[in-house]
Image (cartoon, rainbow over all chains, first blue to last red; front, side):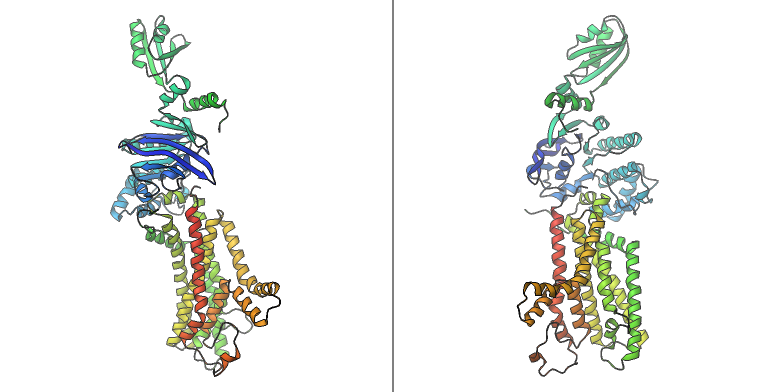
Length: 316
Length: 313
């Protein structure tokens, strides 16, 4: 296992009654990375996660989590990995802090350390004011945040989040994604699964696109865009000047330039060409008004991929 | 394949959590009050009957458990035979599927514990709660007996009553293990409760009557002694039958056998003379072992199924 990788899977396979639901997948998650397992429901994402946690037997292949084998050393894995299941459940009759207290005891934390970490984690996720409220009064978003508080309390090196934004409204989603970014800032590696590609695209460093138990595509969103759409970046240029579109087309790596309006040009490129575009506008005597870059949406990449490969016959 | 660490790591934490849940739950309080009220009614009836009809008896205290008021069908023991399974089932029918349905199972099992600790913890906490309740009830009976009869129990009476308490706990363990088994097999708590209650009704009320009919149906030409023995063995598949026989041997010291008695066994015997405690225990030992073995068998079956079960909701 590479020292830079916190998770490595090789030929990971899961069969139920002889039917493979995860089919020999291979991927790795680097230290400090946010890695997305994305794909439709039933694609094998949760099964993969459960195998990595040692909660489901591996039929074939192998996995290493922080260097530990989840089959033989599940406790070592679970001590270091925090898990937020899909639609996380808590004991509704207990308060937020009592729920965390129970899991803290299971982790073996001593009283003083336990109380300090619980208070800190709940405050960090914005539940500091409701620590003593029973969880049955919590909204879905608050429950998800409580789940993240558990991961923070554990001081996990890896956070595995299964469909963390599923069922959340846009504001709760935005808050949750920000907490996940904060996890990364704390040095936590994050493996998250989602079928809502567009929602998690913004926070993932790399993604693996799942379909029917296989990883169909793997890489950064830009890489996938280049691979599937031929372009990895959309650069929008607003500038005043003559024949700027031709000058932009001449930049190496630019695939096409569209002109939606008089002073607005959209560049389709293999790489981020903002600096080249700015230089080209100025060298052409133009006046640069605005410059922005976007990567193609994962939805578009995903759908285009299956249109190309299977004529659109994929599990949606 | 050897797993790292102890399978029971975290057991104490699970037990404390489950104990706290049981002792504070409304369901448990209702069931406990039900048991106490019914038991007190039976006890009151027994005391009235003892005062009216018993002049002298070396085991007067034990009669508190086995005597009913004239006209009333239930003794303290018969109330326990019915209500202890109800309480045990009430505590176990949603032990595991409740965690599934609350979606807490995968979260809890992602903590550094094995499934063994969760299952053992739930079972032991349930059994401990039942033991505490039964001990309190037992002390209540002894205390009320002292107060209302005005006589202290002898050492042997106390010993027999204590063995009765232990056997009742084992009896509760069987039903708790059965309820937990069905809570593992069925994802719906309602289904698990219905199936467990159905099986309890069948084994307690129908099976003792059905066993002789089955024997006659399958071996109609056997001699009478064989048929009686076969029917008795078959009826002992019911924990209620086993419990009833143990209670008979322990609380009624004159009981000399739990099966057919042959004339040769009665030669030289003083009819009506009480057996020493040790001999009563020997008579009831197979049934006691049967209750404990039944608990273990049901628990192990549930354990094996739970280990192989997927944890995802």
